[in-house]
Length: 321
Image (cartoon, rainbow, N blue to C red):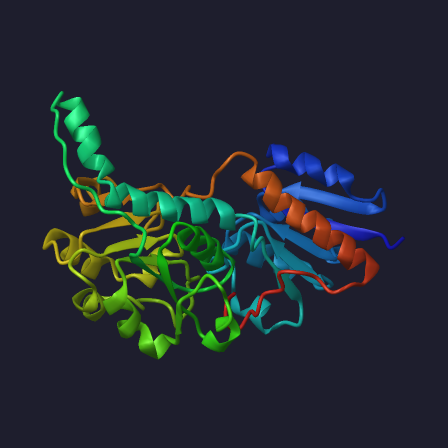
């Protein structure tokens, strides 16, 4: 069996790293969070498993000329795609799919939060006020999805099961024309048509040059006054200043946000004081066992790598996903 040298850019104390014990005895493993930790092993490295930021990864990359495969323990790649990696023939894979179910559940939870006005219920309970009101059934309402990959499909399957009308936008809509969960597919140049029909808008897109600022002032003008924006993709896909204005002026009903331009969200940020915003600290997919699920994706791919088989979750580095 081929001897493989694996560099693990992660906290050595991370519990999920114990799963690497399942790798063959012929695997040489080095773990660390700084480039200096790999000075001796990097020159002969075959694989990099990354949980560090782009700066550390790029430093280690320069020291490892024989690397054939890089795997990201996260699904988002916008913070680790530096030019040398993008232009190289080295395979890049990620944890796509490991977090989709959790994010799908969060999106539906956010829909129900606004449809049933849970904030009003909590406020009335705290004030000891008996305050009956009419809520809105989500059955029959439209949910538009920006980005129809694994996460988008996880949202769609749940929304469809609850009787919602699912609309979806992707770069190549023809790939999902026959999806039984989707009532109508849209291309990026049709985004305003989808927005105008949507009661809820769920953003699942990765951050790329094309997706940055995809939803801005004009898009909020097109949206229904009662619409809710749910962002579980990347913060900069939505123009933050335009979103704040739309929320403050009540041009849309509200927003549920798991991702932001700057993280952690700094004290004093307007999102904290807006009562039509539901905030999640970029942890909507942090359900029990999420790190282990991510590691399992890598372990299964490692077996394929050893056998010389095609890897799963291969990223198009030019596109960024």
